[in-house]
Image (cartoon, rainbow, N blue to C red):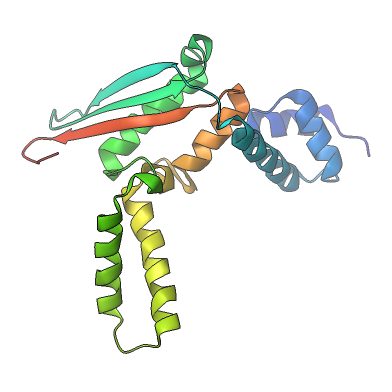
Length: 197
């Protein structure tokens, strides 16, 4: 199938993938722009997974102070090279992270950072809310409520405030695939006037 340069450009603008990757994805998808987009995203996730074990000793610490001077954020995002740390896409991602943290108020970077006692307390509350139902149903309900809990408190699981169809984790994986380096959100702190951290 012949793929026009116009549709390749559309896919490239939409995904920021390389020209040849876009053309190949369109050929595999029979010229369907949506299917090609999905193919590129799946490949990007596979690339990100391969890079996740590589050391990240470079990066940036970014700050954000809200216009009312009542909310402030510091975030550390690490990558493999200084070259990537200075990249415009990396810098834009870090800036978006500071806005996300300021507005969505996560408590942890990832699910793995949630302390076991916090999880057990949440599970106990959820079980208490659905007493009287069969045990198998209770556990399914608890699992569903835990997923919601993760989406509220874990930065990587939160829907992106600018585009809620994707999570911060999705954006991170796409950035890793695009820049070709492992990138890690190491830690953050959010301050709000009058609140304990």
